[in-house]
Length: 154
Image (cartoon, rainbow, N blue to C red; front, side, top):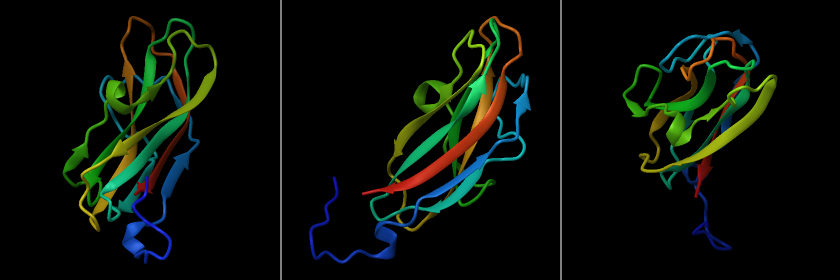
């Protein structure tokens, strides 16, 4: 819920615009067992709003053949730019989205996460990361699409 009432003056930092990025370059049969950004990197730079809270939505299209390992997409957030300190490390159980084991087509979905405690006015960098979870299958999963959206929350 917002703390704003009718007649309240809103400043630019109270609600900066949402930012997004996406890419449909297909990544076939990745085998990485730790998170990587992939090529091209799907990333955004954003300014933390006055509330210090944003929604981060990561999603895409992932698929795998029967018996393959699963692919997870998750956000990574850094201070300032791609070389900055890691604020949020990617993690499938905490805030990622992934393929179903044994799926035989591309499935599209997303996961939304509230990020709190940001410094208002500070620049942050967020990107989609992916990894393959070795759950006994073969490496025949693919990524068809990756997307990230960062939207201010009041």
